[in-house]
Image 1 (spheres, helix red, strand yellow):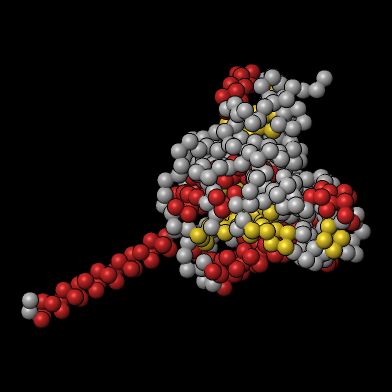
Image 2 (image 1 turned 135 degrees about the horizontal axis):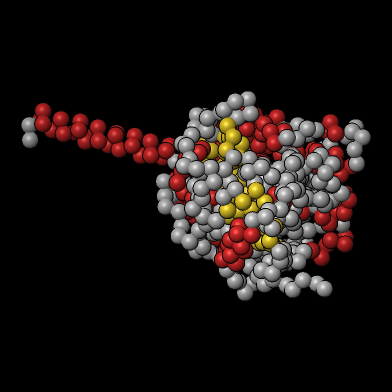
Length: 482
């Protein structure tokens, strides 16, 4: 072959290789990093951008102003374990594997698709840092077994009550900390027990939420050059239930120490301050690394506000205009403040940011993240994608959904709820109770029951409630007490 032809061929091959590398790099950049920040028991009214008047959340409010506020976004359930199961599996409460808080080893099993396994299959590095609490695994590797490359935190939910635990779990291994619990809680310090690690510390050396944010920042730094999914599952502002009226435990009350408030409310205020601060640290790092425009950050909460550890939900009006709190299926128990921040993609609107008032819920993360990653979501899920609205694409109709949003709760006599269009129905107890029917387009406080005025809709709601529940031998409704 003549030299000129050989040179031309080499140039063409070199150009193809260069274009191939560029194309691969471009394809990788087309997959956004995803950071999902989950607060624990944060109410709809606890953020300034959602109406909080007393406590300040400047970093989250800035994210809302320059991003998108979802004003009708719902948790998976009204307590943590089932809510997180819905979030991770994309299946609503009538079909997800963990449907309540239980010490039984009912957990997401290896092989069942999760947000982590789907994104890992799409080439993402995945991490869960903080509180797992999806059932009570009888091993330490459950988060890793279902798709997370990295895990650091609490595996069982009772362990997560303790902000100063004697140990944490890192990728299946026990990590000892410089904390000591009171003698009465010593029997719970065997890591293999179902409620291992719970208790109240008498020696406080390392505050777990502070360890979690440092680990989250390290994960981002280590994976800045490849697509990553960080599920940052905080365990605040949950209370340490074992500490009674001293359950809002923080290292420093700071500016709240001098307030004329009950001590638990000072602790709660400090937790809100710390949540805002740590979220801001993540956003700052993304910008510092030059990957903020390549990263979707979503902040939300696993259910409505609690009333535990000495904290009163109405002290700071934590549920805002909504009725009910944690363990209720009224809006205050399941509608949660949700913010999406993605510079250059989520376009800011007016001074309050872009507002999306369509109804979404935790199950929708599965279809959304799969679409953003460029892969097909798993079969058999109850999930609509809101990737389009994030990118500024108009939706067909405000109330249209392909999948149903459904909740059930097995405590306190049991209850069910379903959202269909602008309507929401509640039935308690499950299966046999009367129907309550509310128009969510103008009655977020659920003050006007339309069940008697619209018997046609009440009947339709009852049919939906019957249809959405799939029996599971692990989750049986107890007969109401007489």
